Length: 253
Image (tube, rainbow, N blue to C red; front, top):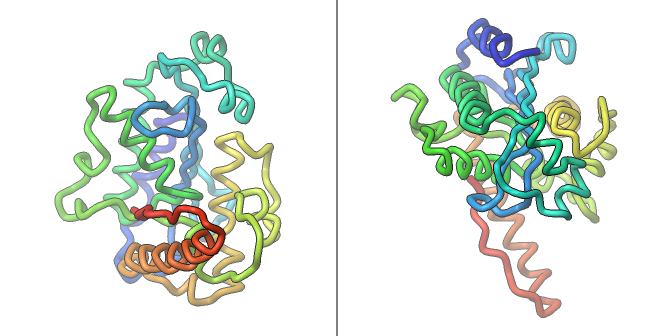
């Protein structure tokens, strides 16, 4: 599916209210592959947006994918994970001024309809996009949104939600979390499209297993996740300090 088709699907999507519950909400999934992990210094080389109609599920997905020439070298470690090389990106990648602008336009269109952006470990992807927009002197997503909805991005982060409701031990990578909730990936992980669809797929089993998740409204969503992140970080810092390690001081979105 093309960018134009995604925009057309967004135009047909309903305008949601603040009372819309997460379990029945439209979602715009987002994932990136990048040259490295430092927002503002590294850049996006691949991105996918997936618009999910809660009534139709996979069959109704509208997807758009971008491969982008970042005009900077891949970190070898990142290349080993996502498979992109400098040569491939130079030959096949879109110009970032076009690709990054399209991504921001689509996200802003969804935000104007109160359709949340969903990303696993959302701060990473959101900050990477913001860094690329700034680098290429393009308007930020918030600057593209209607005034009535410009209080900030509406975001769903399944990682934050999972940490709040599931007290299991161990790592919480996207791969392990999807296995826990019984989500079967549609492709290989560390492919932006496969990762995006898998992250979106998490919301249904999370809402079933933990009804309080499905009942979260769009109006409650951001503050609930901020508090959930702070609670998790306090507990995690106690664990770090008990082992003589430095605490985290991260803020969620």
